[in-house]
Image 1 (cartoon, one colour):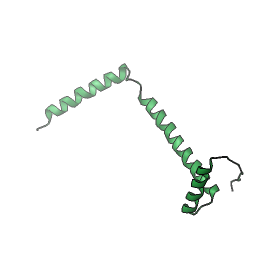
Image 2 (cartoon, one colour):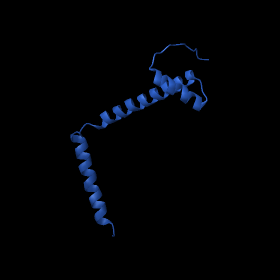
Image 3 (cartoon, rainbow, N blue to C red):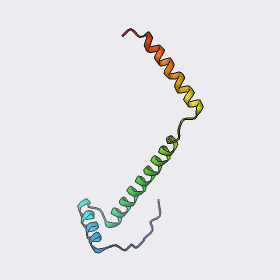
Image 4 (cartoon, rainbow, N blue to C red):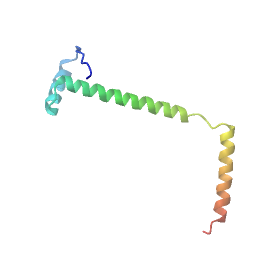
Amino acid sequence: MATSVKTAISMQEELFKEVNRLAGELNVSRSKLFVMAVQDYIKKNESQNLLSQINKAFSDHPDSDEIKVHSKMRQKQAKNLEREPW
């Protein structure tokens, strides 16, 4: 079982009231609400980091080998389309 750690945070009173309201609405403790919020934030941050890595991997321009392959693929596809009885 995971060990729990207590922590203290400071926030504006209006936000604290909203936290209490939402915790009551969801029927969870404030602690549970904070845990849920932090878990959600971490998951969104990980997703954003992964998306950034994917975008970075695909942001480069094709090298000369890729350009040659694409050109040959287009030529082959054009020949195949010419043979099709439309």
